[in-house]
Length: 414
Image 1: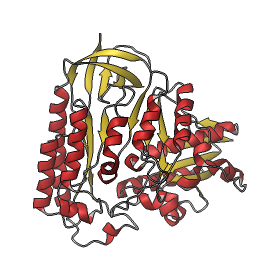
Image 2: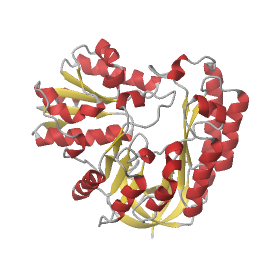
Image 3: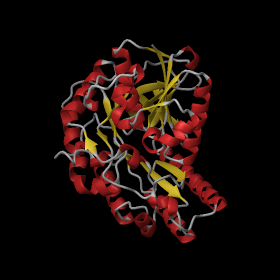
Image 4: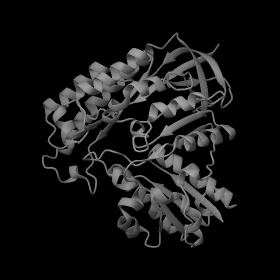
């Protein structure tokens, strides 16, 4: 059969995409790039916020007009199956825990029980996204994803290492380790993220590893081992540590299970050991009952910690979550106003932080083609570097930073 696959959302979906592609190719299905050339359309969905949900529904309406067989995978089949069916009544639903059964679903057969991690994956470019765990130990009051992906189920270290070897054999150079919370990895099977990273150190070859988002509450439990796990040139000096709010009362209502001071402590420990580390954080603006004073605490925190990257999201009430029924909803215009103010501040900080790298030299891994015949890559600290010279994907190059913007550095080959 000819299969068309479209993927949205987080890196967990990107990892599931490589798994699906591996299964379909093994069964000799042909992957096509146009929905009208396909026999089956597969949509890997995301429903983390309301605007994303609406985009998924719009895509499903377009898929439905083709009158082709449609498979809906990702988070929506797990938490919003009725919503999916209201748009595409005949859709075949595939939850995140069962994406490795896609070939059976398409063929209309009963699946043979297999472990998800043991399935061959197919990677299409220089970057390989590899899932190290499914689910999460936390249950944040605003999050719908933990309903979709369930409780934490870490994959064995040997299975993750096998996936990395497979990706490298397929020509990948950047490995992105992903989970709902990488800091939770292994806590259910008697190991941890630091131990996994130490096994990664032992793998031969020229490649780099990006560690995905880690929740502060779980990182606190094993911080020394995580810090030690980063101590290898293969590991990008990059940390994605969401703070979400600079106010402890709001963090408590979010069920985040850490304080602002604990968040700052984790950040300081990383910066002490790895001074050039790139810091990414997340903020939710307009959480129910958030006062001006509480929002200002978030502003002051951002000014204090000066993250390189800040992902700002306006609060979105999601089905099934505790936050959906909370009183004290903030007016939309007020949320937009706060979001714009914080966005402008964070862009200014990012610009200032990036200017500090001008004149420095980095060993850049070229990972993607950019706009206007440029190439983009990542420095040792995961800073995005744009290169105007003609280079090859997967190349490691010595680059001097000659200019900067708020989202990237401009490099010149040495």
